[in-house]
Length: 513
Ligand code: FAD
Ligand code: MLT
Ligand code: ZN
Image (cartoon, rainbow, N blue to C red; front, side, top):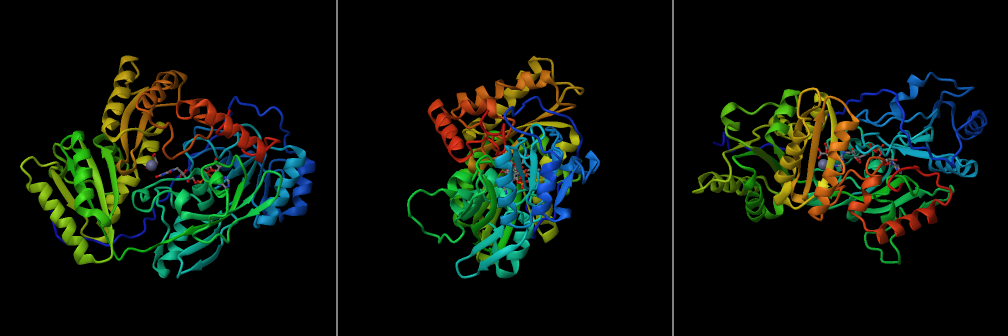
């Protein structure tokens, strides 16, 4: 039963990601590229201040451990062996670096917060890492239009904090908000927890400043909200994963901050109830619905086991096969509360209820705790073991079937055991048709890899889905691109890559093989 009618205001989560690092290498070799050498370091010293150059090469000569954090990804799955990380402070510095690398044919990996989940932000070999973290200033904010212009290296959560006193929010929210950068978000076309409400970055990004692979600065930051003057080039860089250029500035349409936010976690007896529930929730909450997030029972258990949010009581989760987190964001507290309460009453009092229980946040702390359970799944999985992560688009009705089929498949291969695959879980953004299928293993092994691929991708293709709903292709899925893009599309992607980056220096080995 509902414990209370009091609904809490959302507070910004300070959930931060933790980083595990270790060194190893990948087999791909970008054969036509040159390594950074001591002469290059001497040249970079003319462009950048000493503190912006981290290198194991002379004369800087740092120990490799000092740059290990840049060479290894968040999951500790992908490992580069770059010798040099540059941390420019201005767009001009980025341009000067890129010009030099283009002439010398040195591969460049743009890196934001390094929270990417497909190996796109770390080198394949010893490419130079260009880290945007020192470019972290808000350039302007216009409270009338809501247009925010910021350096690419601004951390997403910092932008939220900047906008809060202006009663605006970034139209994007994800569990990595404490580390990921707006330039990384744009470059991955990150989806996240608010897409249902605010749409994709292809709509809310109004302009970009990009350093092209020859060092030219392409500035479209002054774009007004409506601009139909020919080809919309910025769209090419949204989701390009650093393969076409380096995003140095972002103009984005911030949304007015909601005056009232509420959340509730609903426990469902069967997965089959998720879809009718979504239809009912949309119908009743309409304009105030801001999130509809799904997680199965095992995801919930992992999250609370690893301290992400306060566990629900035994009574609240009894008989639950899965959970849905519903958030509302609206303009008037009483109005929104009334709508949410009416919804919950109708759900609980129905002849055949779709839910067992609904736990409404009664305080800001409880509001944050409910979100932490959902947002914390990623981190809890990485504490539990090594994650094989598939962020797929498939019809909503197939979410459970795909998770179950994957588990059965691993079982049939004898891999479902504690020293191999420990869990197969599903969670995700129901409102966007995006399932996160995660296989949690004791280690990354060729045997598990071979059991999962192409099995998962063929399953996705059989449902006419996408092999990447939001995390991108990176290094992980270059070989799987063809499951979601036909040869004509891939050919035109190659032509675009060739046009922008004929010397092949920009994030080599990513997106396209
Ligand atoms: P990085 O990881 O540094 O880089 C990602 C890619 O973008 C790389 O290919 C890199 O080369 C490129 N890149 C980075 N910055 C630039 C730049 N300035 N110019 C050009 N290219 C650049 N993703 C979602 O979509 N939705 C989620 O809900 C979500 N939740 C997450 C939760 C957790 C706990 C974690 C760890 C990750 C999550 N992610 C999610 C994945 C990741 O956070 C996003 O992809 C994010 O947008 C990456 O930003 P970043 O700054 O960390 O980029
Ligand atoms: C999420 O929705 O939690 C993120 O995309 C990260 C993940 O898939 O684990
Ligand atoms: Zn996601």
